Length: 199
Image 1 (cartoon, rainbow, N blue to C red):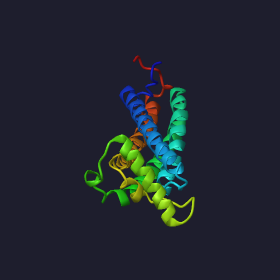
Image 2: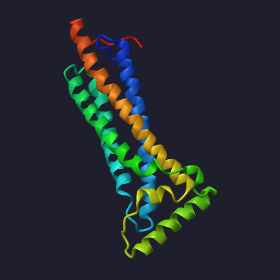
Image 3: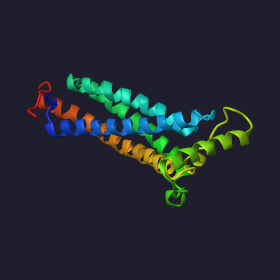
Image 4: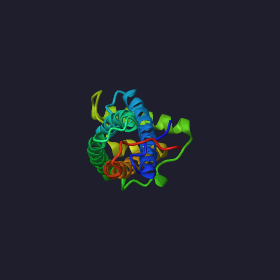
């Protein structure tokens, strides 16, 4: 299916590339955070609020991105401004998530966290979460993000990957929030409705 060019075919294709990369990053974040939530909840401990917040914001952003692609293909000229505003808001949301995740994680060195094979890491994480729950005295207690990330090397690297992907999403949503108004302006200056370019 050809990409609508809006009077500037390279920018339109760049927008689709940025949107595709953002969707890929969001699928990775959803997979990692959902796995964390499943592992932590299985031990009767509430997952860290940072992880749940990241999962929620990422799911909503992925839904928006999937809905925005058909609007882009439908040559929604004025809709480009609305999408630019929403992209700017998502950039702000992911910047906040990156800061909240980065506060405890920036001081964590994954290379000095205990190492082991996958089975040992999973068993260690489960034992850690169970001991933390029993120490706090109640089922349903909340696990801290730094405690979870520092429990195994795998958790540490995966949590830092989530943080890095959130930073990447800030950059991608910033790019798309600048590209969309530019496409609107180029289409308006061309004086014709956006035509489809040959891909």
